[in-house]
Image (cartoon, rainbow, N blue to C red; front, side, top):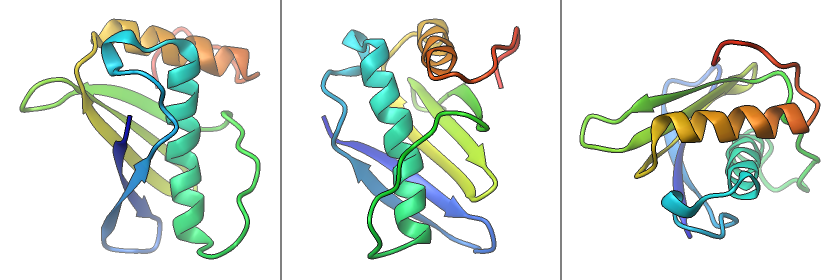
Length: 119
């Protein structure tokens, strides 16, 4: 499926919309692998905006702040922030708690420190 992600880079006063094509299933059927692909795609979109025309670099799912928020017209959005900037993807029709749990599992599996709170 194609996912739109709004990317804002620190030091700029505008956001751009990019697409992620690496998510295999619709949100209601997501697995941890789909969520990993989405998070990595969001970070990759930010890196591509910061370094246009350069080769893709490896992605690490550590050191990022994230939150799942309800969207005003239905569904939820995922927002992540790193020192480079921020990215917001969605809205997605998926249970907020289930998505938060998948994100937490993906981050723990990637070696990110576990936390009892959602970032």
